[in-house]
Image (cartoon, rainbow, N blue to C red; front, top):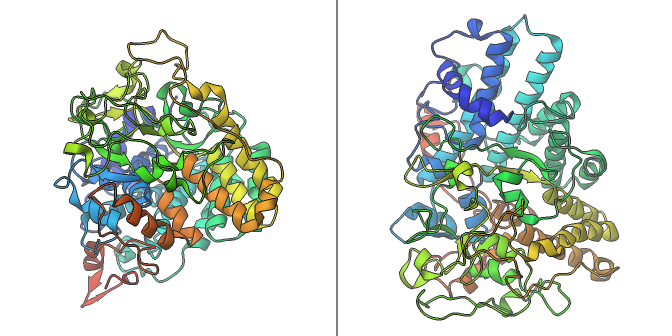
Length: 601
């Protein structure tokens, strides 16, 4: 049983039992119809823990996880499509200039602390932390819970808390640490001037030591997910030797929560199809479910509800999250099937910008990495099994000038299975496609980065080539259903474009040297993980954000109008501002316990 299905059953109970909408996201006590003492049973604690898992989807608003339809839904989306992908240059906001302009400010790094998106994200992630802390507080009073169950509950809660704090750390850097030992009355006065990495590490180490290798409910964290998160934390902290020790174990012995040995699936798109999710590549995923009986899309990736083609498309709404031309160009390959790591924008992919859908257009005919057409919807190429993308008719901005000619693709459900995996209980679509927070390709590329940093360039190349070899598998060159169902109208069973894809030849990384090898690894992450919310955070931790994003603004502004004037300032733009609302709420006697990030005062 998927834990998300369990969450759908218990979400109303878990929320009503544990959370009320106090004024500050840091001082919400475990309150409600039942007391802590009444909840202090095995089933009560499990319900609280279920609520902590439920907060992964970011759909919390004023005490209700089930009635959210306003902008908080996308402000707090766990996919980080705004903060990771748009801010990282993978995509434009999309739609038109009048719709959600606060995202444009984030994309251009012109936001100030009053931008409501930051407060929406902050308060929702802290809601997840509050739920983990409530679980641990009540568990301490549950004397009838067995030692084995107590350890399991504690390990899962601390894993989730580490995840939530990791999210805040990479977004805001300086955040207050609130755990179950801090009294509710003192929560809002906690400062944000202490580095929380050691505390994140401590929670993850406990989870590694105490979580089982497998779980009976798909979606619950296991030992290997915790070990991967800890290795990722070490990578962010530049503790490469420590990270390597853990990545070696994960790669050699790790299994999914449902017991599958970690491995890349043959078909890239199987990671983005509800029919093939929870496969051997799923390290930790938010379990989405459509049509859960609530009459809402809260459990169906509501945070990404805007991110479907617009106009006369079958998805109704809303034309956001349009991939950038810079990203499309990145998939160009040379005569040997390798990427143009340094000069990709000198080899642009042909697009239909300014060409009406009723006018003739021939798609690009030169060499491409096949991942472009599992990541980016472009005219004349099958949009999964929905027929060929028609171009301008699916783009909201007239002439495609505002945000370009492309549509997102990794979050789109299949036409053949839409009755099962699409959710139309709202004005924009929901979907049962899981959101992979970490998948095995990500693990291999993080491990490759660690090996290169330690000088092990051949091993780094081996890991990168595993990812590239999967992309080069001919199954990724055609649009075939996972179950080989009879094609629908417009569905293609032949190669959709001129795909030319190869692994790096033996000794290539050694020849490039450490810096060149790292550059190739960084570029591979861009190709493999595009539109998955990683790019901005990668650029910041690599120290390349200023050069990369300012070059992006220069190039992309010749294509679209929306990001003109954008500029990344190192030392300021690396992190988003502490929300002004939170600073105000933590102010007492004229002094706030929260210190604003540099450059935003």
